[in-house]
Image 1: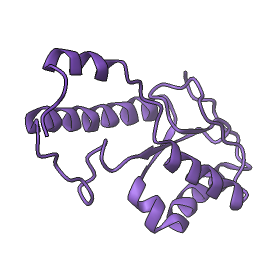
Image 2: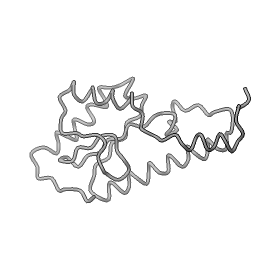
Image 3: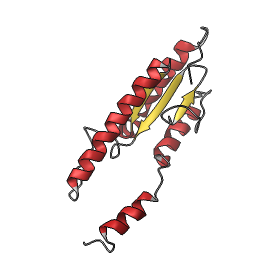
Image 4: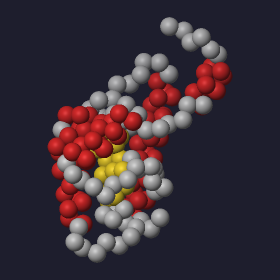
Length: 147
């Protein structure tokens, strides 16, 4: 089906859309954290890279990466139209993810990235990964990460 707008108008409309994260997937992880009594996390914190969950005391950040937007090797289906644009977009997204993770680690943060499909198919593994890090940091003096 042909687009009803010109290429320029479509670009203007798309530029107005602001990312707010993968709300359903993030809410699913928040529900699992509560259900498993894992506390100490916050959302929407001012931390480089805009992590979905921040455990300041444990120096841990958690990102929930959507399979489509982050180009999951298991779930990604390449769009049929405008393929060069999408290939470039997903390449830049993965590149940015790697840079954000590296910079956070240099600043003393532990970084966990959870794929959307893993959260759906294996939620217990995701929770166990987070719990292991949170539990390993309790009881020891924690250095505050650089901002």
